[in-house]
Length: 257
Image (cartoon, rainbow, N blue to C red):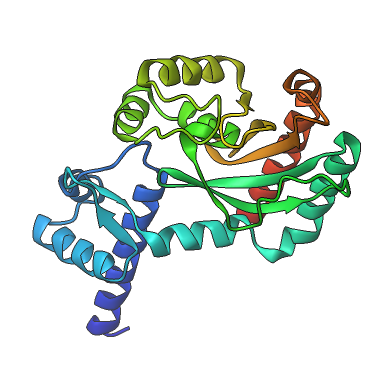
């Protein structure tokens, strides 16, 4: 193997190691920490980070710390939701929707929003129509609040203090302290609710889909028109959602391993 090939391989390995560390980090990491953990000279880590930023694999936040970029997030989601498991995933959602009688789906965090990634809609004539790809606010939805509850208290406080907290529906929480108390309650119970906080006349609950290490990467939700089902009635199906969340998480673990 030539020297050029070795250097090229070394550079590729370093890039992959940087991406691996950033993807597993519980919080944004500094370039200096990356250089230390990977035993890479600071000028070299700076050059690699610049290249990864230019290609949108990584980005720096306002504090100059390294966080995943758009392309890195897209790769992660591609691995997690590979079409190889689409049929099984849809079957799990379909069974849940049929049992509960209401639309069930999966949402994923995307910055300060949640994205509806997948769903199976019920056949009732009265529907809450939120198509796949819809962006919803973290603080006004069951899935979003569940995601916020998975963050550290410090991270969560920083985020909600900067959110606009505009009113979407009659029960939208627009006070930082009240929202923080709600999130702490969700952190303890592991189940989040939306009591007409995003859309008037709609209620929802959500449970986490977690990795083998206990890290939330998606949320399983069910929502219903209040005219057909109350929040209390919906909460009776929480054990079914928790069971389905575990089955969906197992699919992801199988995909990765």
